[in-house]
Image (cartoon, rainbow over all chains, first blue to last red; front, top):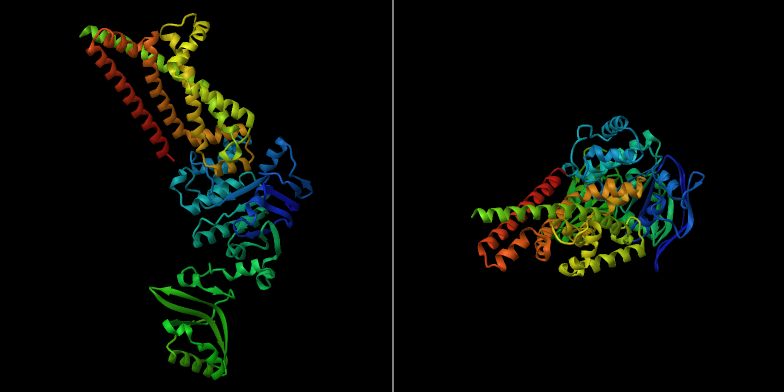
Length: 339
Length: 220
């Protein structure tokens, strides 16, 4: 289902939560909406998911206007929307399976049908053996899987993910994003992913809109936005992008990355070396070029340790000379085996 | 000794009758009132269908009834007992003012238990297309059940106390016994026996209430 937002406005008193947002969200795609806290994401998703009415403007699902629906129509329309949340929002009074059953129960579906549906949904999200588990016995990732199963129980055409991975660790985040991606393809869902994490956009979305102070400051295909960011907000998000891909390396998380590719060489500087212009001297003294992929300074037990991930290009003997030169300067050089 | 047993036995039975029925009736009155107070409250307080005027009117009534000293309320409500039961004295007649006196308390206890339910959970239920009735009966009440049980426990214990007071104005039961024999006739032994029985009742209710509440929580 295609979603269109036209000139949406929502104010809370004097606070302009959303001021004039228009967006076209294509069907069967994953559309990211990124913004800092207070940018208006939550308000926007509350209007899209029909929890709140806009002060002005309209929301369209395909060719149907949905922001002014009357009570019964509104309830019927909401039953065709799936939504998952940062805090999972599961019913603690129900088991995992009974949570998934809830949206079916409220539609008056028969018990046998519900049981069969719950079983298949729990299997789809990989929790076929936890149907009778109380919610408190599940891990964060498992809770979000149950929430996804519950959101998809009524076979919606739209899935809203409101900071769905923000409470999860990086590994679990990746697993949940992979699950959403595969379900999106399988069930032809239009997914709207609200987040403040650029890595979520990078790892899952096809399109992205960047929100700031209640407005869309930039939007487009994710590849385009990443290669050619225009607004300062987007650039800021990209600068703080951390590596989710290499979480096994905790230090890598603190690096600033300019490129999603890894570099062949990792240079580590210690103490006072962080003040010396070693790389520019290297480029001056030897016929090699240094292309920096990522870099950063960490404080480890009171000592500054600088890390640069880079490529050194040039003929092999010059590269070796460069490594030797760096090592003579007291820099630790790690060379990756593959490339 | 057998006299004390007989006196205390009859009085205990009367107290049990009073407490049991006034609990039932105060719940019947207070539960809908509490639900109404919760759902009609402003949205930021967890109201699922904010109704400002209704909420304020109900809130005022509840507050007024709760600030009445219980003895005065009993006396004010005697005509109502007479209207409903044909008499204003005796164990059965006391159940009317007891229920009405406890109902506002029950309403507030229920209201605050329901308001404790996580707003996010209510939001989720709403996004899934729940009607307001479904939110109340399939989400709010089940989610709040352990707190509701604690609230009912508290109500019963309060009613044991109220029923003892009611005894002093002709309601019978352990309070009446303690006043008439223990206080007015200097029968310390009867007074002591009455107090001990009340104490045991309170203790038993508290223990059972805690057990039920804890077992509900442990299954989650």
